[in-house]
Image (cartoon, rainbow, N blue to C red; front, side, top):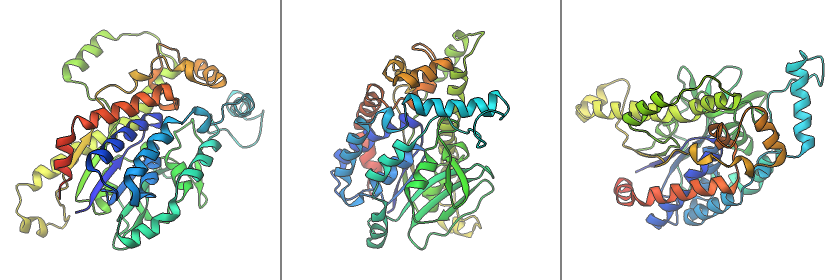
Length: 380
């Protein structure tokens, strides 16, 4: 049985996945990765490639990922010094404020310099080990999804079993390549904030922008079962009605609008795809195996276990603005982020222990509470 793990994006919110993975490693006691297929998008691509490049030592990898995120700071993800912020600010001023008449000819397309993240990934990821794991059969496939900024297409760069056939759909395609740090940088490039990545002359950004079916890469790679880790806290219908009735506002800051936009990018697609997969599974359950084989689509049931946070990860970011480096606080306040508002936007950029440690612990304990259910699902 090929068990797949799907890790979605969300900037600093992806630290929630780290607690989930650590709990799974402990409850299974697995030395070798129990997941033969792993797919990641955005910051989830960082977690997926870290784990799969150490698939022969899953328990140690889970602890290493935990330690890496706990030691993470904003300075290790993007440059926070005054000179870097001023350089990019000047470029934005020339591109937007003065119609390109001021500043360099190269127009600004991002707010933060992520060279520190590149250096961290080059140090921590061991992607050169993947081919040997494919050959030995420890893992069957790994996928990293990105967005092509020119075509608006979701591209899932993957590597693994030679029998896996590249796929083409209207808005998403699968392309076999040896995976590199550049692919991970592209997948985790939060739009507007982080710079696009150039891969073979094309510019790519965060995979969550256009990947409307985040479960599909794992299915194409041959997953028979999937555990997916989301970052969206699901409210009850009563809670939704109450919030819409009580929350009224006549003014909005750019930070608040940006938070809603990033929520749309990072939170919705997995939930929608999970509902779609459930409908397909239910439909297939009324067909016999022979009837399924006769259908041209060759659909097959793929059981899914979706793990979600028990608390709103955005709300946990309240009060974290003071933890940001001085220049980043200045930048965020400029777009309206404060201690009591704009926290959804802050949550995606808050690579600070004050925030990520809460999410790691929450993911760990949320997962342990579902230990029996998870272990039963993982059984062959």
